[in-house]
Amino acid sequence: MLVKNDAHRAERARSFALRGAGITAIAVTVVYVAAFSNFFATEYRSKTADGPERFFPLPALNKDEYNARMLALAHYRAPAAASAAAEAASTATTTRRIASTTPPVLPFATATTSVSVPGRPWPVPTVYPDAGAVLPFHRVVAYYGNFYSAQMGVLGEYPPDQVLAMLASTTAEWAAADPATPVIPAIQYIAVVAQGNAGPNGKYRLRMPDDQIDKALGMASEMHGLLFLDVQVGLSTLPAELPLLEKYLALPNVELAIDPEFSMKYGNPPGTVIGTYDAADVNYAAGYLASIADAYRLPPKILVVHRFTESMVTNYRDIRPLPEVQIVMDMDGWGSQAKKKGTYNAVIGPEPVQFTGIKLFYKNDLKPPSTGMLTPEEVLALTPAPIYVQYQ
Image 1 (cartoon, helix red, strand yellow):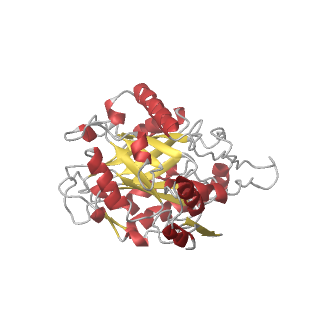
Image 2 (image 1 turned 90 degrees about the vertical axis):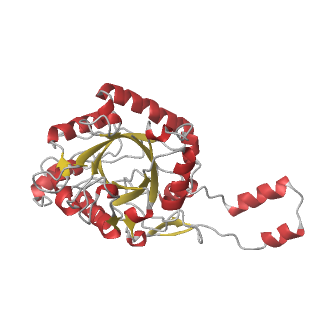
């Protein structure tokens, strides 16, 4: 249950709420320093020590920059520019002159709807985020796993110092591949792990202890980055699991990921069949995060939804992004370069929600017939270009 005590909420709200800068400590009395970029000029500290609580507002969302970045992710070229380039490249023909009289298909936006292009699925016409949003102003590059298992990803395979060094190198590669988009590093820790055994409660899931989540949080903070808590519910549910993570999700640099693959709605043990979430499940998670952002006066949270088959997420048209929550549909299937591109184009591209992501596997993506992992440049060429990239 969300904490409703006004004094508690005010104490939380005093902290600097910088997305991307991390936190300098977990205690609520510590000031969160806004230092990642000048975009995040965010402060919630009381103006007076003894007077009534008043808080500085976040700077207004730069809608022009937001629109331009969303169009760039969709590889949109303004018709006028494209027409001028074509005219300069060859002699005008009658056909071209006739075509040039056709009104161009231009983007549009309203005060409450983000930019979109009529007749195209991307960018998605949905609400603008609240001020302080990370996406699309930054790209998130995350390292994934669980400290108890070397088989579940990078976090359990290497010691923390090596993971952070690898992540720093990888984020530098992405910054070089797309210099126009600053990169925020992230640790993605599986905080609720699906199990092959039912366990004493019959839910086929294991909740990680606080000291393990604290370890992941410390790594994210050391990188001045984000922590994503990944949830695999097994035979449990999101309403049963998410409230238990509130004390972490209430921090300004902690986000959420949910994995339909291990949501076993029909009683099958995890790993025996691919699970599923409906739009209603995604909307619950988004609504829960929105309530946290509101209660603790935080900038928009990020919600990642993993997906590599159509049936893993049903009724996508009913998924509702919120001003307080940015939703990323993440293609996390593994395979050859051609297979990964094909899955992205078949599952993610045709069913637009808001933002997209992709998972890259250091081992599984190299299995024959693959000849290598997708490079940052190849990922950026996808439509839309993923704004969230995860490595396992």
